[in-house]
Length: 198
Image (cartoon, rainbow, N blue to C red; front, side, top):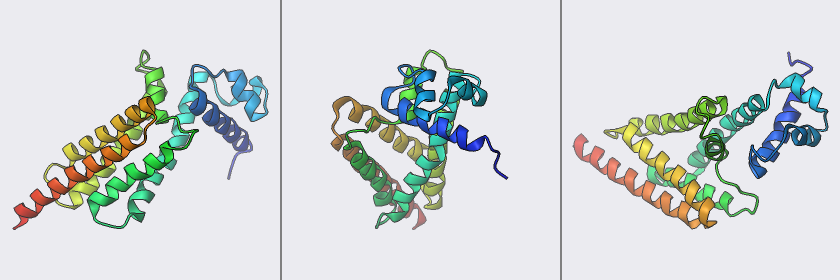
């Protein structure tokens, strides 16, 4: 049974998501989050003991929806495994062309908190990236790829590298190029797996 406090907490997290993603966590004050949520700062602090706690909740709320979206793009793509993984990059490139796109919230937060490696938001961001890596690894293992973890990490590096470069140049074609590289890596790995099965 939902607790009466849940809708208020959700409003705060939604307000934090909007502000932290668009402006950055250091630039946004707790007062601004409370105002956007239509609440007092005291009410916000009833639900979150600190701004750090709120930042962690903001990232935690992005975790499953982002992973679900990647899986959806993968599942909906027509074609074999290399094309399905490339579709993730193509869809992200489409998102990156939107004027409100600000990159990966997990990477941006980790950059802002680089001098605080023990921050709970850093752990949440690392866990998010690990979940994506683990999903790819399991997917590649099912296809008989010899070193699925290595390939999953290569794809993750292409993905996160493209997030950084696209944000720097404001050119989503870099993400599409990264997707082509991912497709090539997977095609090569599948070809090797096929030769070994013969």
